[in-house]
Length: 231
Length: 239
Image 1 (cartoon, each protein chain N blue to C red):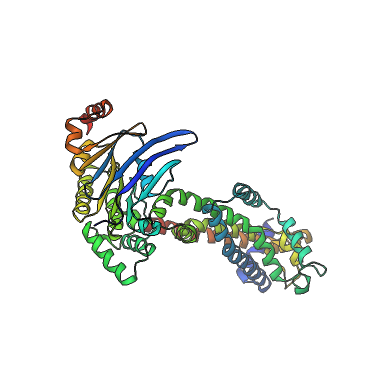
Image 2: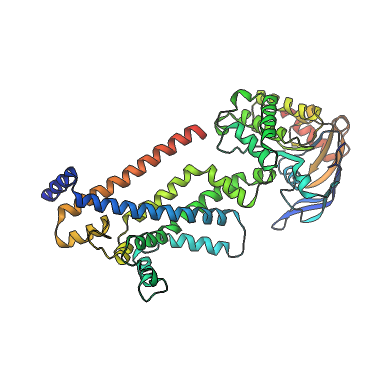
């Protein structure tokens, strides 16, 4: 254990090229997934919060339930869709980083959408009468609410990022864990642990935790500053 | 002068989950005198104002403005709530937001915003975030937001109920300025002193019914209904 830790420390300190490549790909994949999922989830969450339509409650329950979507299941479904015989097989995306982005986007979209829905709905309860009095409803109202709670939405987006960067099942299945192509932090940790290369696995684990900590600290500071400024 | 008034309510009732909150209220609100809707907590004042303003739909009866164009009537009225709801942006931006929603052109928005903020004495705080202003300042900002819209009718729902006496005085001064500028005031309150200071006529609501309508002086000197008499007597010591 001590040996592994010191090995991890020297790997990180030396800026090992292989390690950096893996970290960079992980960030690229997960941040892309967060970007696309946020783009889709914010309007979905806001619409479900503000609009009234039949089946709305069922949709809310579904969104909340999908927050716990097992990554391996998402991976399997995306695998089937993208495999050569699948409906999207012609694009040849399987075992490429874009396939990993697709899988993670699907995985975290419900998380960001459900948390956005809750936040927007709370704001809507507070603002509804005032906005309607000013003649603002529908899409403009939803946009106004999203903008007004923009700093609270950081938490929802971070929850998505946390999930994306921590999961291993989906990227393993659709990425294939190919060395130098689709190998990311979590899949490397899984592989190297089973192979017995504990220093690399451990150093990736440390980097992963540090990155998540760093992002959360940054988001916390931004939120605090906004709270002081805007109330 | 007003294209909007009179506002006519015919047998308006409102119920939620089978519980009646307002029952067969018929009244005509005309231009001119300030109307104060008076009654105890839970009498139905707020619901009556929300029905008039169009935030709620009556479960029975009709509510008609003299102008049948719904878009125009919406633009010509404003409402100030007991607790002001401010967006997380500057005081100035909160006013321009309302003007933008009303379809006012950009140059005109700037001019009206400055004018309204000056009117309520908040021009020096225009750049400050609205949500960090004090309760009284936020309510003045809510009035500025309404002022900028140049409404023909201004609804006020207990606008000073959560404010201290000095903030209350400031708000009342602004409401008087609205009145002087020709805006029709319709205000709900349970504060008898405020009703006397700001109102010309009283609509007295008791348990969801419009019990009495009278000029302010008559109402306080010679209430006709026993409910109104009891309300005046009961409320006066704390007014």
